Length: 288
Image 1 (cartoon, rainbow, N blue to C red):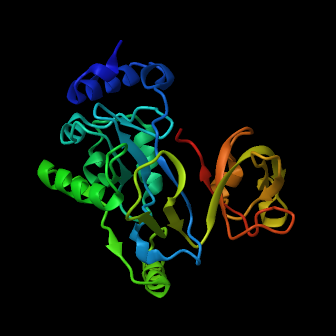
Image 2 (image 1 turned 180 degrees about the horizontal axis):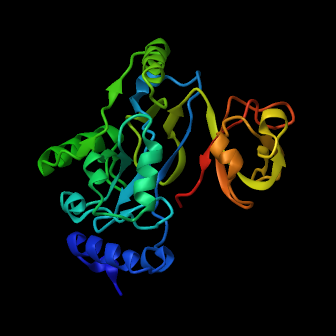
């Protein structure tokens, strides 16, 4: 079944029907992972005046390939037909977003594969780049804004981008964003061509670092936590093991992520031995 060749309106309906009928998402929605730009971390020796600056949105990254919305893994997102009907025939890169501190609601909506859920009316597709497009980022940004303005859909928006004069101005914007509940900032180098993979042309500035680890064991709690999970024993992709307890709610301690689950945690920096300093559980990585 060549779903990817269908017009977006029919493709979204067919995907939703197949998923609702019990077809596994790996059969219905599997496709090669799309090429995307990935960010490096901002360093204070980098001049931010060379970059466009935007808020780092705590949403779900979604790539529009001209036919359908996909996660970074390539898995299809069962969005409503009315939602994708407003999208242009050219590729877009952005975040599905429901506002600050709304990631859990959004990820639950996407996991349910329910395009008829009225909660989709609260979702915005915030565009920040045009994958594979010619020109530097400033040129792509101007074109992106024209595309969004021309579609006339309230849920399709360009991520606001700004310029800053120096590191002090960047720091003030960063502190204001985090104080207001934002994740941090993203910096796109103004004169950079689009390129797939990790690049200094795209930077992130956050008060923490994120990483992933796999759950190896549930370690028992003590005192108030007796009878529940006190912490998770996790292992990083390079084999480092440590305990992850901070950030676990009582509900998660009673019903912890199963062994083998990939979880996301946050930390400030690394110790001399290479372990994360002050790691804090964030969430299971339950989206591909």
